[in-house]
Length: 522
Image (cartoon, rainbow, N blue to C red; front, side, top):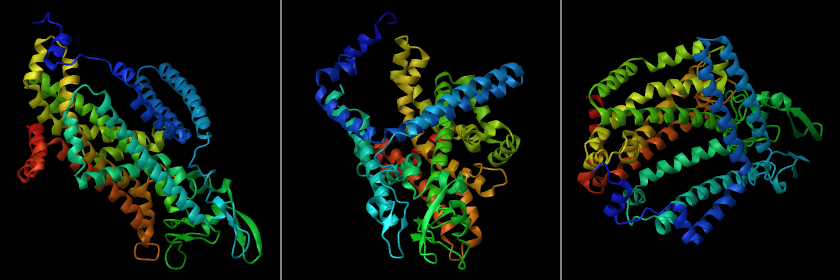
């Protein structure tokens, strides 16, 4: 059997010739070209946004990875560590330059194309500097609506690409993925989770354009910018530093308050009102969305990767290796996460490593380190189950390497479970990250970078006053996202379990996660 060609045998069993995808596209290019042309146009109109965000992500990831090597080599050789730092600095500056150039590329929904910041020329208008001379609220609403509509259509078109592949280029007439999407089409709770996740990803990607102002102008360097406004007493247009305008636009109760959907005294529109320091709350939350999604995404991505690898290794080899991983997971779980986060934040408070992602990189590593055991326990049971299936034994008999068997035959089976538990675990990471920022004192995301937890903390003294919006809206941002992630996980769980189509299946779907968790803790 070992001399048999696995590829030929697979073709004989399936009845399909293994034709490369590019060949199938070349034989019938029209559906692909129609789809990719629209995708190219959608990407081109916001290419600057995607390029700058991608380069910034690569740069931060590169700095984080090289920082780990720097710390490790520092215990062995200071010269090697310094060489790593010099190399890191050079590459980082190069990537930052590319990112700045990408950010300067004009985009369709940028603030320059649809501006909302302007000033009145008289006590009753008209407005100057805004899009088509409209009021700032209307101009901002147009830009916000267009960005959301664009993102939803872009997401639909990506899904449309899968449908094009399924209808024109997929060799198999049916795969389990078809049934998964069919169940999701009628799963309203899961669709709600997908919609919420898309909206928050939109905030993370397009946050600078969605806000009525920018984090740089309104929060980080407010005294480096000026805002024009019509002074009713002087009867003319005057200028004032943004920092001074913020100081006079605080929300600190009934005496001074700029609530949601109102203007301040300088003609600036605030969709969510202002903070107790006068900064725009909507802009603050958009900035917080980006750092929250990046840190939580990095944390859950690392945790999922570790859990997937270890679950397949422990299930495939079992025995001593499985017991070793189980012991390591129990050891990690025994460490209190909050205490570890506080200790690590204190240790790296004054270290340059603690400044990567404004302190978020270290937090992401800790969250990943403390989360993987829970994911591993959840998918260990399904991994053990699939490791005993006949197709895995058949793959062994054909002489496939263990790494190939895990990637081709085991990973597709457990990836659904990973999505379910990863989405639900992400909610816990977001809550933990917000809690650290709420506590402050060097914990969480470093100020002045926006953080949702810090916004809740800033408004906690004004909950029962006219400035209730500070804590309430910030808290709702966290609650809605976590709820959406849980809904997304529920939808994926029900989609991958065919028994959920019946009443009996619904009970069985709930037991799937419990059985997997029990198997992981055995």
